Amino acid sequence: MSSPPPDDWDREDERTDRSERSGHRSDQSDYRPDRATRAAESADSIDSTDSVESTERARATPDEGTGRADPRERERESGGLDRYLPDATVDSRWWYWIAAVPAYFVVTFLAAVGAFALFGLGFALDLAGLGGLASIGSFFAVAFAALLLGLAGVVIAVLFPIAIYVDARAVSRARLEWDPDPALYGLVALAAVIVTNFVVSVPLAVYYLYLRHKHVGTP
Image (cartoon, rainbow, N blue to C red):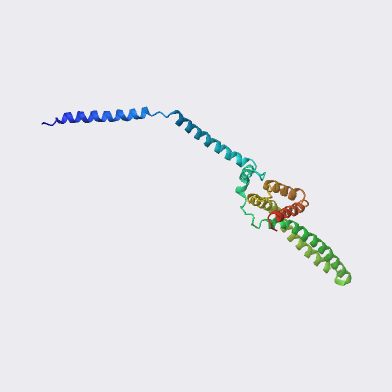
């Protein structure tokens, strides 16, 4: 039995290739998802969208049982101030600068009492025969102490609003029973330093430290 010529082989291969390509297109065109499949895909898409929306709402609304908002949402609302301030935890020592406010007030008061006593002593010594040397020495001593207190006051005035903001943010992130608003405390502290010259800063610092001691345990 004779085999077909090579030309017949080529034509046979071409017909086979066309048949395979036609069958592949037919399989693709015949695929039609049924109604149940389309419904399932649509339901999955809706569930995914609802999940994303519920997550965003959970970040923006208070937590159930605690009644407070997500600290990350509060930080976004503060205008990105956290990018320019140091990070801290609830165990950090930023509250030291808050405690420095009432401590500075006590030291300043004691320094004023000491200055009056020193001037009185110098005046008495001058009357005893020092000829004004005691008064001059008292003046320079009081002036030097006042310079040191002034520099310390500037440092505390700058760091107090920052410290109370950073510490309140750390306490808020710790998810304790007490949820201080960092922006509110920071703004009040800044206004107290600029407007009232530490008159309001002292009770604000004492009140904040009292709440911190009650809910955090330090100071």
